[in-house]
Length: 209
Image 1 (cartoon, rainbow, N blue to C red):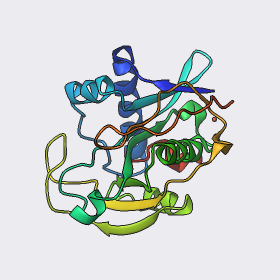
Image 2 (cartoon, one colour):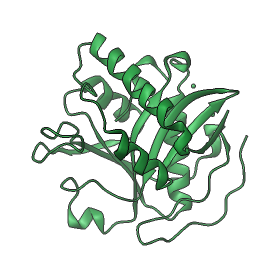
Image 3 (cartoon, rainbow, N blue to C red):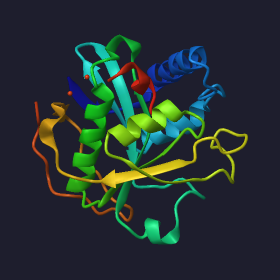
């Protein structure tokens, strides 16, 4: 499998991924992602170069967003002063569930964050999805706190305020062939060049943020 930067041509695939994930989550009794995400906001993140796609032959197997920009109202000034990368919208296609592809993507993101000079890989997860939170804890993240004040990016109250982090560390065991450019920390600093490396997810990790 390879990982590469998404392009505007991937917008329809990403919207379909989110819709599929919302249906799956709803079948499990969760309200996560039931509110449609604005296509223009998703397109803006694609154009910013922070959305990544995992390709398995001609099939898109997963996606993750990795950005140096934190969502407003979640992180303290002290935390924002620390070099960090933030992940969200980690989604694995149902066709590729059960292969720990989500875990490998987390390792890839941590590896790339470390190469960029980040100390932390951080996320905000759905506040009411306890199995999802347990998934992150099993993958080495530590829960910091849960923020309920504020609003969601796509309208309504804040619903994704379970904050967690783990150390950004070098880890080439993810197995993805990496065709992405170096990540850049806030302020535009980038890490050193990385070599290409020759990326499986319990069903619960179908959608991870």
